[in-house]
Every structure is written in C-alpha cells, then in structure tokens.
Length: 391
Image 1 (cartoon, one colour):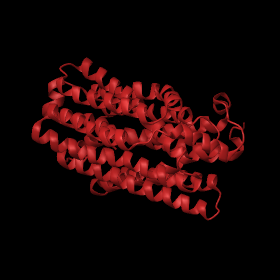
Image 2 (image 1 turned 120 degrees about the vertical axis):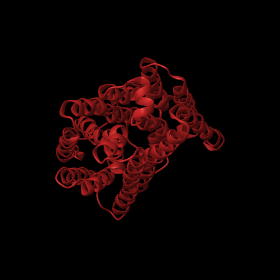
Image 3 (image 1 turned 90 degrees about the horizontal axis):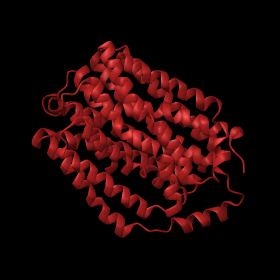
Image 4 (image 1 turned 135 degrees about the vertical axis):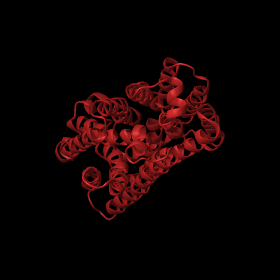
C-alpha cells in the first residue's frame, strides 16, 4: 500500500496546472513520458528481482528496496529540471521492483490453495487502497503546502513502515520453501520449461491487458476526471480514490469467494479462470456504457468498470501459481509482473498521444476496450490446465 503512495504522487502533481505543470512547462506528451518513466526500470528488473528474492529471501531484500524508493520519492522535492525528474522516477522503479516478487513468494509458502486467493486478494486490495488513499493524501498536501512538500512528506513518511517490518517480519521463507516442496512431492519445473509453455505466454499477454486498464487509471484518471467532467482537483482525487477503493473491495471478496468454492470441491483452475474472465467482461461493459451515456452517468460507469475488474485481480495471480506449482516462485512472479508493468510504459505514452491527437479521451477509452477483449481471448483459449508445463 505504501509503495503506491510513492507511485501516484506524480499523477496528482501532473494534474496541477498552475503549479507543477507550469514549473516544468510540460506538454501532454511530456506528462505521458513522465508517467511511464517508473515502469521502464520496474518492468525491466522484475525477473532479476525475482531471482534475488528466491536467492536471498524476502525480509532484507524488501527492506533495502523500501529504503531506496522512499528516499527517491522524497528527493523529488528538490528537482529543478525535467531530465532529473525523469531519472528519479526510473530510480523509484529500481527500488520498488522487489515488491511483487517478494510478496507473492511469501504468500506461496504461507498459504495453501484453499486460502491463497484470499491472501492475494488482500495484497492486491492494498495495491488499490494505496492509489486511493495516496491520491487523497497527495491532493490534500499539494493543495495546502505545494508539490515540493507533498513529495517530501510522502517519501519520508513512508519510511516509518520500515520499523515494524524490521522488528516483526521473520526471515524463515527458505525453510518454508523446503517444507512446501517436501509436502507437495514431485520434481521442480525448470525455468526454461515454464517459458516454453503456452500457459506462461497466454498469462503474459492476459496480464498485460489487465494492467493496461489499471495503469491508464493509475496515471491518467485524476486528469481524466478533472478535464472530462469539469471537476476541481480535490473532487478528481476523491473520485479516483473511490474507483480504486471499489476495486479493492471487489478484489478481496472475489478472492474469498473463489477460495470458498475451491474448498467445497470445485476445480481450482475452472473457478479462477471463471472469475478472471468475468472481471474482464464486466470492466469492458462498464466502459462501453460510459462511452454511450451522459456525463453524469458515464462517471459512475467508469468507477463501476474499474470495480468490476476487481473480480480478476486476486484470481489471475493465484491461477498462475495453481497451474505452475513447482517452479521458482520469485522468477515466475517476476515474469508475470514484468508483463504487468510494461503497460505502465505503454498506457501513459499511448494515452497522452491519443489525447493530443484526438483532443479528448474517447480514443484512449477505446484502446482500453481493445486490450480487455484480447485478455478475455487469452483466458478462454491457451490458459488451461492441458497446456501447463510439466516437470
């Protein structure tokens, strides 16, 4: 959750026309490029970060990344040029690259199949509460003390979480990994075998499609609400927060519901695929409605669309671990999360270009719909048990 505070603070600043935008003299294309900078390094380093987590465990790798990203976020307060701002966002991505591989590895070795969806749902809900709460805090700070103090306060304030992490987090995931392998039996699946399977490539494409919508919302939603619905910056922050909170609630409930069905004997793959596909379809239906209704209704359709995507959130992550149980967790999560964050590069830049070219957000929304449709196709076709890699 805290990691997302330091991701969305820039998105809020980029909606500050008279302050931040004026200071750096940014165009819409510049805004898209800055929003993408974090994901250049974050996506590129996912597989190396997964290897580091598998090699050295969760506790200390996560603590080192946490310290780096918090200090980097705070340092943005002293930036004076576009180039330096861009480089700091790349460094922020380096620090945060450990977040998902470490978290998913910890969940894999602490929760069995009947509880894993709920655990992932809570984790991913935090990844939605983070933007919601972070956007709200950033707007309040920017409005009251300016963008420099906003970055400084969020960056240094985030470091408070290091204290409970260092004192309360155990360093036993290596022992738990050994225990899990003994319990499961069978042989490990090599990384090469995983990468040769249709399931992992379908997952890569499906993950990209899911995250494209998320990162459109994460990087452009404050500006979208402000410019399309004539809101104040404060109101756009509130509605952005509402969108992500709605998604967080649905993600947690969907993970719990899927676990409950699996606990009653339903097939785990069928259940998690069903929730994943339903989330894509619900999100797409909401956006189609938003394009064809008056603004006062369209606003709520956008929020409902992002909330509906929460049906997918926990289950598409848990599904990967269900289909590929014997592989190195950190590296497989790294592959999937690399695919999850390439849209962090593509969505801000493509959205900025579409807005600048067409003069509005309709083209950007249609692009989201195209990717949602492609995601449904992947989960209906190649992401199935019969295509899963075998030891």
